[in-house]
Image 1 (cartoon, one colour):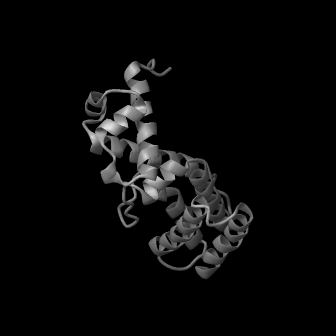
Image 2: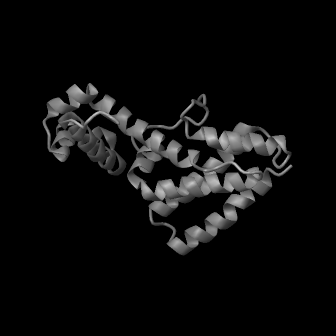
Length: 191
């Protein structure tokens, strides 16, 4: 059993939810601590006491986004077919982006910048992708540098999901594009 939820937990959750939506829809510099607190129905002191200020709240929003995407990708089971696994990871990535549009926007286009060249940590959303790529390379299903393959697939997925979330692609076009583009990218790295 976990510890019982406190009023601080509730206020913290409300602040994170409000901040997520605000940072996904407005420029960072236009968002004040007062606006964040008001949107969450609390005092500005809560932002300082729970997060040590605006930067701490931004970090918590990003951490929750990273953790959520990692959880989504981590549940994709590895099979004997690493290319099928890569496609399944792409499906999971797209699903998470569509179901968590504000977190996705914050993580990949809002207040936080994403450095795909950084070191892959234990709970990094890139880890399941790199592991599947490494398996594909080890059985000669793909050929090339794992990081380059990962970036190529991520750029493709990011572009598709971003256009889909922005409404630039209707549902049918997004689905057709996804089903054809992801396999095409993987074929481009075929051994």
